Length: 405
Image (cartoon, rainbow, N blue to C red; front, side):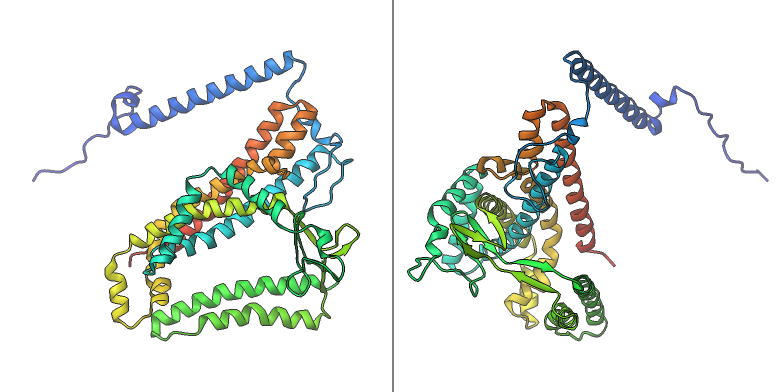
């Protein structure tokens, strides 16, 4: 009888790092990483040496100095006697505001335009085509300036709202004013007990998410379709309204009122913010529309025909059959569009909107002379923001992608 033994294990030798295919790729990556880090270290050391020779050693102490300039649009309290760090924070929040509003609006516009571009109605489809091609083929900076000019030149001045012979009137029960100086909208005032109402609203949103997951699982198990839309609306409004009245209406609205030559009170959304928001939304929405259109066309036509044969109507076919399958094609390109919108917001300085580029990368940089520090901080902010957007969208992409049994 012959005994079978395992072959002797080969001992590791340094030459295997180059000649053994199991280790060669790892060796090349390590060498490339070391070379890259050495180049970065040399660039940083060279920059620090040159700055020290100019009498400007790398330092971020300027963030604690008094800024000395005003910012017209802000989300938090700020005045010219506050620090450059505070001014930079105001600019960062302004950038995040435009990015958030723009991404939401561009998504809504893009989805509707992408779906309508495939409409059987020839006029609707052609109108959407004109919109998409018109915005995609003109630089976004021109759209920002054009929309700013339209808002500033066509809307009435505040004095047009004064008196019995007023030529302009406020909207929505005299609560919103659209003027050539910007939009004035009601401002929520949070009084004692308002946090309970806010927490109830947040819990309602969480409840809607869990309810819709439960309804979907129940439908897959039993085949019974529940009125998810109406129940979700009830969960969204009723608990919050109940707590709102139980707590004695702790959230009130401050309405804008004409006082002298301008409106006072409420929230003032300046022309620069409106122009930047609309331009970025319409411009990015055109690209999202093409992404949505291509994603829908990537779904086999047989899926639509099969759903129609089962008795589903057009809107339900699009919502329940086509779009869920198209999401795997739509989501990855949309990540790039959200990143582009966020970075394109740096063009805000063209219309005087003080974002991170206008504060930290503009006035603060010019006043302090700290070019390297300001640019590094600005790059770090956009890098972190872009990575955060990518992380959230990649998580959503993993959640909605098709899963095989």
